[in-house]
Length: 129
Image (cartoon, one colour):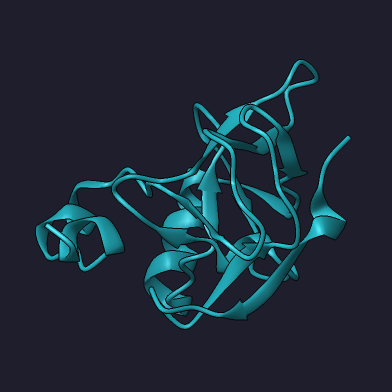
């Protein structure tokens, strides 16, 4: 069962707002199912370029999920050493999972996984090196 009710959005020391755990989340736990509008690659590119929309998740092949209207997942921040990852579940839903145990009030992070993010990365892992 997803922990979506056990995460909240708060001011982030990483960037703007972030998603934080309200309790201990064990490693390998499904935290939430990523929901939003399904769009194709051309629409994804248009929204990124014309609307400066950065809340889009790749869902394989030419499928993307625009989470701009979501209340939580759009606030997940990048870290080069994240505590969460995104993957498909058995029903082909795109989901957020815990990589390791996440303590109460810890910010949930993922590795955004695109080259430009690493060029001038200021994530907590890079700034603490």
